[in-house]
Image (cartoon, rainbow, N blue to C red; front, side, top):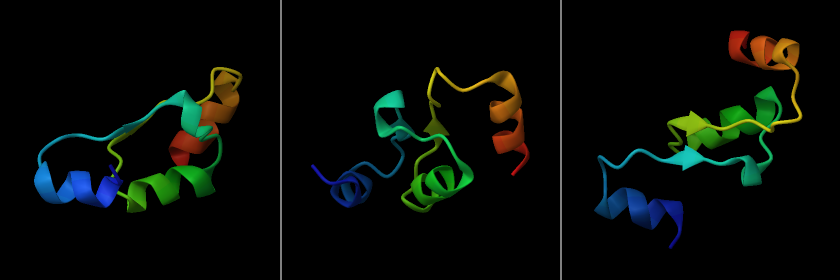
Length: 57
């Protein structure tokens, strides 16, 4: 079921993006945010420095 369909039927349901989405930079996280994703689980290969930098942006 596409995310837009989920949103129209389950408005209050939080949407999380798993590591399988391969979100690892500002561009990908902002795109997921535009689609209503509430939480992004970043790649486990990312360093703490990379995660901190991404969080600032």
